[in-house]
Image 1 (cartoon, rainbow, N blue to C red):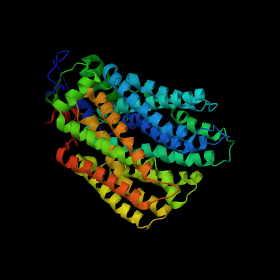
Image 2: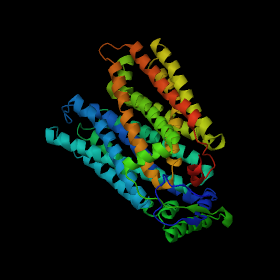
Image 3: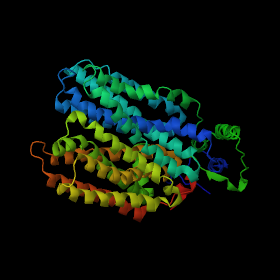
Image 4: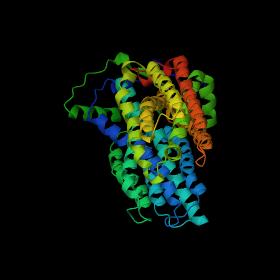
Length: 488
């Protein structure tokens, strides 16, 4: 088949015919794939860890015995981190498309390590130290944002087509494994049993400590042969696929030859900046661009709205002390983690469109029902958490599939930048969620009716994503990335 470039601009080099995509997709699951997923998928675990730690540590940092930050200054930590993620996704997304996936594997992780470790070295609350604290959170976010663009691209390009849906959904869902881990570890760190100045510092060092060995594992992974082909590096692509096939065979797995008739024509495209890319995406692929924006924005709004006000809701409406709210994060995070694992294979077996639409619509309907029950005072803190666990079991699988969608429906030469663009848009719009929901919560005079209306709004937003998926969704299951990007 002839893989289209993203617009009418002439290709920068001659087309190349190759069986490499077919050779990647014909591979059975092997230890190589397990090693690759573990090495690259840690990005999501670390992000879940960082977000949960920052959310729970913020209140601790207002203690005069710790840093004595104002509530406003402490609350801005998450916003600065999210801004860093947007910057990192855009910066490293472009670098990943220009320089290669493997070249960014170690860089993005080291940037995150440096930022998170430097956060723990904050020594005061004066203006200079507050600026330093924000700078370190921005740097940590930059590293994780870069991970999203480079790592998701690499995973999609190296996973055989028949496994791509379940693997992507499961890997993206490990964000919540990191959140659950952070919630567990923070109980002894933030409950006051340690010296006031040490517990929160140790919390910010957990991520770098867990991920430090991953840098060395990543260095042994090959470059994406698909990326190499798209950039005219045919010899390097052959070497990379041969390394992968040799590692698969070393596990005792026999590989059949690929019929030369399965060769496809890959035509390298020119490098584009983000403004050009946006014009290309919305002019050449308007349906897919609308689909990607809608799925990413709707899930981001809902998650940010619920997650960043979770502790406040538990405190204001159920009387849970701020120091105890992290215990309720554990089942909530586990419910979100289990969803993609339980439902992931269905995205390959049943198909993208019915599963994504079903998860978005199902979670929206359940949240609307939850809103009425919340308004009626049916729940206590435990049963409300249980209800959210069920709702977000489906929402989490859908949200993970949103990332899968934007990473597989656009041409390879702009894949990382496309992920970065939609991630940035989603984060910017999603940041409105906590603001909207925070305005609905008055801790002095909690009004369940106002917040219930907010939940109904969140349900409607999520269901919008499901409707758009039904109308514009792409049937990408069990198809090669080149075939998906060539679909109308």
